[in-house]
Image (cartoon, rainbow, N blue to C red; front, side, top):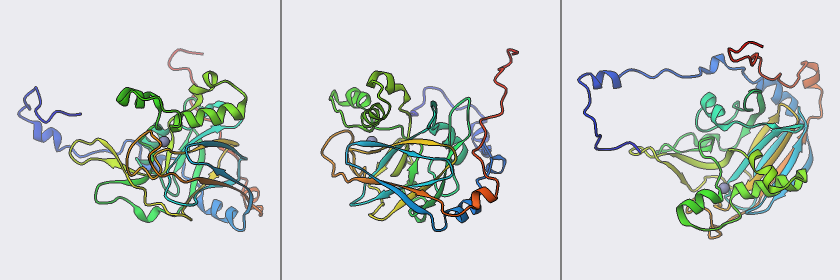
Length: 291
Ligand SMILES: [Zn+2]
């Protein structure tokens, strides 16, 4: 944290330096904008293919073909979900929350895209509906669906509390991915990555800028809907922190299941528009070293 009593004195022009206005790092108008109108047309009368329940303090994987939709649905009570996404045929291509944050801001909603890491850097999915978009930012500066936090994990838990807890989202995601792939927990651990915190309500304190969470405003029936830009393997953990209104990494919070619903378009709007999965990033990867 930044010291309230700095060791070094401010220079004479400190105020002038601090008064420089901010510049947006990645202006949105330079981004590949999602063709939302097309996705909305494709979504009309889509049909439910499969519904998957994710039990509390567990994770489940799911497959969504490119051009299909999926929803993460709050079922019985306020519950936060930690989402991982991979390109289904290549687990090395996975969701990159840090770059997604740099491009779209700290909290995601309709029209924002979930980008993959280097060297792919293309949209894996696009958010097409968010029933909590009314929340915006509250008086504490908190919003919903963040790409700030990482995922609750047993290592940080041990670091802070010396506990051995096995149902953090990190471990839940490992178990589900190991089961899906047949690989061991050791082989699969590095494939689990920073998440989209679905329904989680978070922000930074106004004074210390520490990361905080508060009870999620999500209620049964709320959902976050995605369009799959590529063939996706997803994994969703129903976080042991429940609605994230209290503590971390224990069995003391009230938890509820989440549901993943897979939808298939029933019209040919995508085909008519010539829609295809986005290509991987066009940078030549020579990194100034020649070929
Ligand atoms: Zn968690």
